[in-house]
Length: 521
Image 1 (spheres, helix red, strand yellow):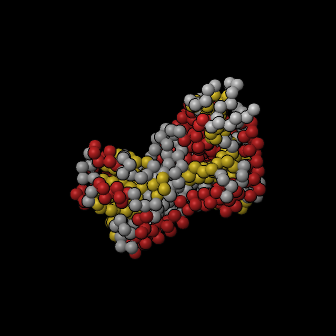
Image 2 (tube, rainbow, N blue to C red):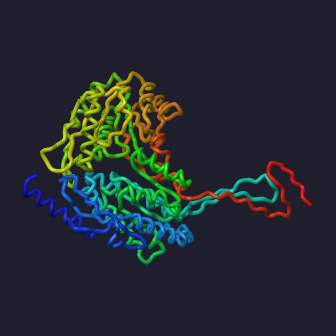
Image 3 (cartoon, rainbow, N blue to C red):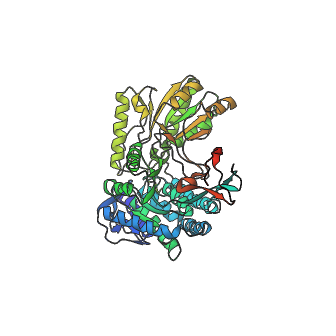
């Protein structure tokens, strides 16, 4: 990057930070509860870096175990009042939050591109997801339905109803630093829960900006104290959050290894979890597919967010009849991908999040080659520039290579050839993860088989749509090692509430169910 371009980008960086009262190189608190930020939290500070240059953006003061406990205590205290607020009134607070994100959409998107590295178009889409989930949650606030069940006993009424659950701990990842936690807090708040949010330490400035918007919008309202932020290292803050019995539910997004730790910690205290973990997603392209459509979907699915989406296409399963031609077209498409500054509208792929992510990319490709895989395209670390840039890679693999079962969180695409739809389904389902999957075909019979009980075993099964992306309204989540949790729509709200079955006897007799007789004078 020339001195002139670097100077221009530096000015843009300062402008982006100023939008949220942040200064380049400064120290800022990453801990808030009770409606305000804590000036001097006790945790060790962390550096946040611009992944496009590797330069330090700011130093963030983090939470220690004591601040975590205080944040939970404040959230629990707030819950005792918030649960009594009528659900439509809670929905009004969330409606205002959605408006707050609408007003700051561009500011937030630019900050995401700066600190996370995803391109502006994707960053804007991420903020739109938060706006959309707020809209959905507002409507949901008037539809937290119970049900009445016919009782077998005379003069009895049997009903189910739902109550607020308590404090919800949200543990979120760097790749969707605003949208995915938003899926949780928007629904949880209308359900009557309060929030303690532990975001990724790789994207702390985005989290601080979100918390500032929440403070601005909720100040002076019934929701003023319902949301806490604890940026901190997982070994201290994360474990304290998991162990605290006042936290009724943990919503966690991250790797399958993170899910194992969360599940083990919650099992000790019978806590509840909504888990959305690793994805090792496959796109199947059959001989009869619309290849132009499939090409666009696969290209975005592999390159979008630099391969750092939970729904990234990591395995491409091609029927042999079209494999060679489709691969030629895909490699040609890869050559057109502009890799560079995510703040530039011409860029299609930004950097990886960190130097550690680049190391994982290198190690992953080396292991693929060791196991017999062949590099077909890309595979280079771009060392001619600052930051953490790599080329998206295409590798020819076989279905029995052990590494195909692993999720490498980088833009590496395994290509596997098969003879039939049945073999393709077998390959799709042969990994521990079960998040997203796609089939490209013009055959109605193939599409229906894919969506049947003998088809995809993933939580998301698409036809002629890529593995990446999900609309608000449909339940989002996966099966197997992906965790089984659901967020973002449908009846996912039930995960943030507790169900209560009630029997009301309005008569003067005491009949027992199932015809049991228990005569008492």
